[in-house]
Image 1 (cartoon, helix red, strand yellow):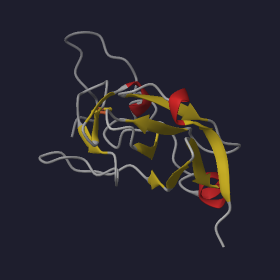
Image 2: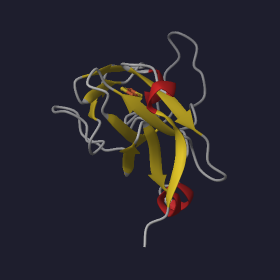
Image 3: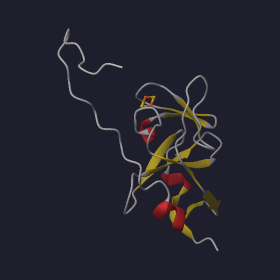
Length: 132
Ligand code: FES
């Protein structure tokens, strides 16, 4: 049986914006609110290079990553073509203006995913030693 955990009120999430939900383990989850007051939840990590989706621009049922503008579907976290990748989506319920998430999913889903670590810096004109 699912245990639904109260997270916040719908109005605590900015319209066309997001609010981050911290977890004991793993990266934050981003709660998004679109213009129709629909609420969505994705791991706050772009599948491209780990950008913070919570700082992206919400439009329709999509969010544009703030780093390189990939578009992700807020329903399932899937990147729009031609890009490829997916960020984990989380179950959300809205009841009486309150946002709830599946407590078990929030505690365990995708807790192994981390942000990518930037590689070593190079000076301009310096060749990469292991260029692919
Ligand atoms: S990190 Fe999101 S588009 Fe590049």
